Image (cartoon, rainbow, N blue to C red; front, side, top):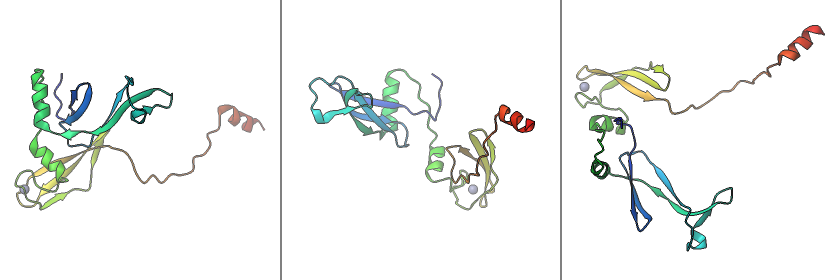
Length: 165
Ligand SMILES: [Zn+2]
């Protein structure tokens, strides 16, 4: 398995076939829906129904963020574990508002952002120690679309009919 520090690994803790907890190595909010099609003996109010009528029992769990527990369990399977860079994690947790070199918050981000597909970079400098670095961004969506009316696109047949008339 290739190591990727961004990948999210989960540990699902079962006891007697019941999910007790889901642990994650990510601080991102992850919600897990548990779906068990073995509904024998389940109370009516525990049963959920899909649009197509399929019944199941289950519930929704939020994952518990616990790096070391997830690392321990994956290690028990001899899985290598991507090292989470604490400095990077802190930088993101604090919205990139400090210098990764001297820790100062006297930083200037350039407005210009270079983008390439899903990724973008913006240069940042520290006024205290004069270090520079690139903030990394990832495309997550768009906002504030100011849409213009779309002209109906004429079919080729319509254009010909128009030219002949
Ligand atoms: Zn600095």
